[in-house]
Image (cartoon, rainbow, N blue to C red; front, side, top):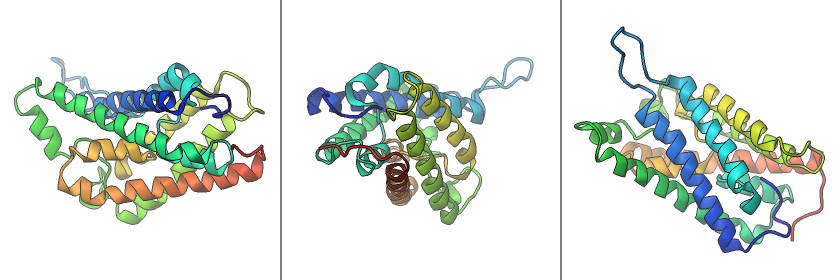
Length: 251
């Protein structure tokens, strides 16, 4: 998640962002759908990875993405990060829409691949997953713990702000070199441990869009919360980072 100075052409970076976001959605949402509530073994031992496993899956996908495709695009994989880095003066405003497009397209491809795999799953697996919201974000009746819209708004602003601050700080020129991916992945894991019971954890509009398009009317109706408020959190983080780490503004 480095600066865009002396970077490859925008199209190349958009492809890298799309691939990274695809992996994030396929790995994180896929774990929630395929493995979180997997069957009980012969001795009555649960085989699913549960809440902790899903949190780790999202964190690990970011670690993989940052080290694999970060050298190409900076490894945002999240519109809130792109916005926050631009506001912080660490990313070029003229590339923001291109990155957002790559991220959303990559996320949708990732969730579509999950659907394609589901076509060959156990009987009625796919219809059950979609009727259950397809691991979409939600509040009220669509919240895993029954939390309301106020909780979803606040948790998305707070945790996205924290996440983007870690991204910006760990990739600053003042930070130790080579450890950003680990810090970012662990932070995303922690964020999911906190917020999965509240709203299934977004902090990433591309992830939310990717799941909601297959989640049905309810998740789609609530999607605006998980687009608007992660962006608000990212913007706040950009302002805070700019005050704490003043750096030359990107062109």
